[in-house]
Image (cartoon, helix red, strand yellow):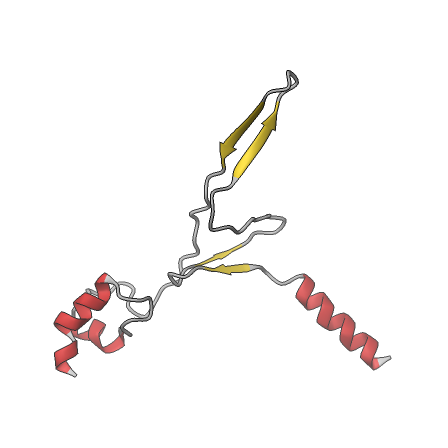
Length: 109
């Protein structure tokens, strides 16, 4: 009986959890309740069929919404002493902030 109860608790928590999409640039998007998504790295089209027999394909616009998650450097001036203390370089490849870090902070270590 206790195994049945434990399995029900496990499956109920996974069924009602939020779906989060992680992007390569480090940003995320959290899906709303009853929101559907299609993930693709190629162009996606919608199809409209008319009563006259005509078919029209239109490109589907990509979702550009992202969740804002403040980082440790949010609100700081890039290159300042406090920014240099908390900034972690090369976490997203090589970015403009990494260039600033190399010029303003790298030699101060």
